[in-house]
Amino acid sequence: MAKKKKGARILVGLICTESGAQNYVTTYNKLNTQKIELMKYCPQLRKHTLHKVRLKLK
Image 1 (cartoon, rainbow, N blue to C red):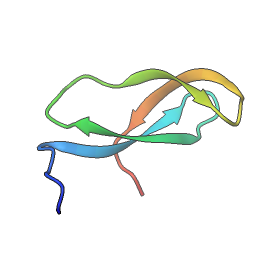
Image 2: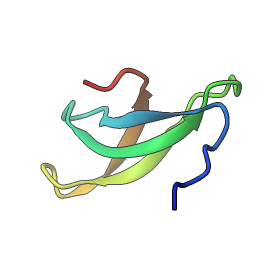
Image 3: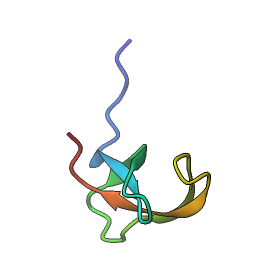
């Protein structure tokens, strides 16, 4: 069975602010104007760092 679409949601990447690596992929509501900033684990630095959203995935 096909999955239902989730409306106005797009795929975005979360990029570490310290190392610049894209470590996570999540969905984002493009109608929402808030920016995502989360404390996530960076495997390169081996610690929790601030991750910001990157809208365009390659």
